[in-house]
Amino acid sequence: MPASGCNAMIFKIVTLFLVGMGVLAMFGKLTLPGSKMIANKRCPSCGRFRIGKGQCPCKGKG
Image (cartoon, rainbow, N blue to C red; front, side, top):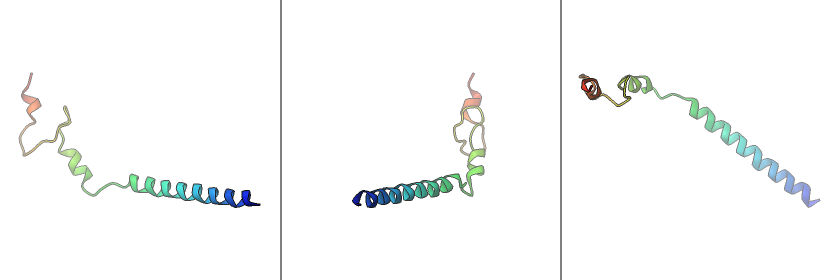
């Protein structure tokens, strides 16, 4: 009967692993409070962060 004890332990390990992955997935879907503001600070054409109120340096090129 030692094989059934081993199977029970493997089942517990797999179950705990899946529960842990589910918890990590829930935390991964959370959004931070300032994420929309940070996304608005990027240049729409090149994706670099804009510092200050002026235009992005990529706008003057070309």
